[in-house]
Length: 69
Image (tube, rainbow, N blue to C red; front, top):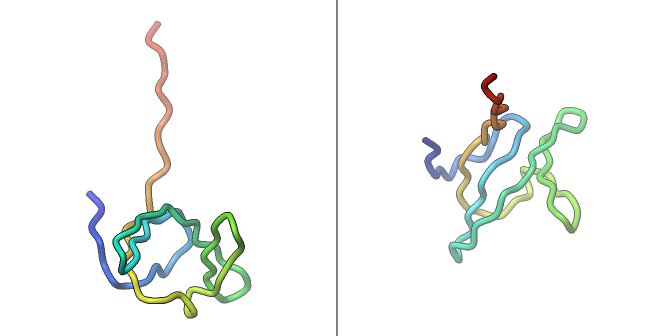
């Protein structure tokens, strides 16, 4: 189970993000060069420049459902 933390992500992946106003989003964290960036529909920001908030993740990729024969 994922839990909320104020610690910023340290690896690429998809994460839940909760702002101080309790709005929740799913954000992609990418590695460009030696820096982590957070991307959404409006652009990308360096992780170190992100304002305070909470994170949960990374979110695991779903598995495939295989039909039984």
